[in-house]
Image 1 (tube, helix red, strand yellow):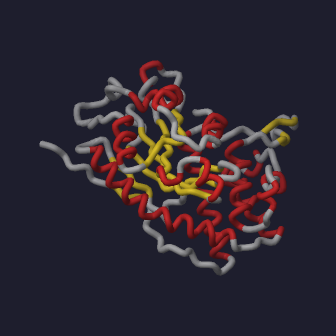
Image 2: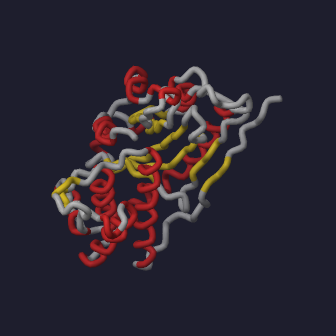
Length: 298
């Protein structure tokens, strides 16, 4: 679990996170050793070393978070998520000038619960929505904890970086697709199925379409996707508990795995909506997961 509200609070900042702040919110990124139960075959490299390598490539950390655990032996080694943005997109001038900016999301752990994973992402500047792109269009890169990890992760980051212009093109395309209200409701209804069992839904599709700012009222596919994604991930919508019948608020998505899964599923859903409208993706699919082999040193 992690604090999603904390993640979004950092979204508002146009500057990179200092290492002291990263250490505060994601201490596992600074682990000096793997968890005690890892075998001798487990290749370990500190996540902070990956961060330093990414910084040398021109990327800076803008958000960081890690999973909470009640198991004492896992503390300081749990799954963590680090979000990078290129230095050319840092500062208030780019945030004012650009509607959206590409990001790279790194996920890792030091307890065996995760390989190194690199995902393509996008930040919508007006609402600070952090989006993660579906694997079918922009491949996830996965590096196992074996061999020369740092080089493999940086190679993977380069692969993800080359996909980022295509992501911006997709966002522009979806912004040009106007949706009727029945189509918007159909999208929200399908999105609700990604978050809750139908019998357990606390809110209606209409509620998921509730915008939080005037700019989000435009009835195009991109804005519809953004509004629904924000409402599902951040929670806070007033609803009715299907089990008790009492009023309740929807919960934020507070798991690293669920955050990534839901984000990718919503992106996939938006892509399917575009295809149903007869609009082909501006980029060719790149597959689902690329396993980058780290060179093993004998």
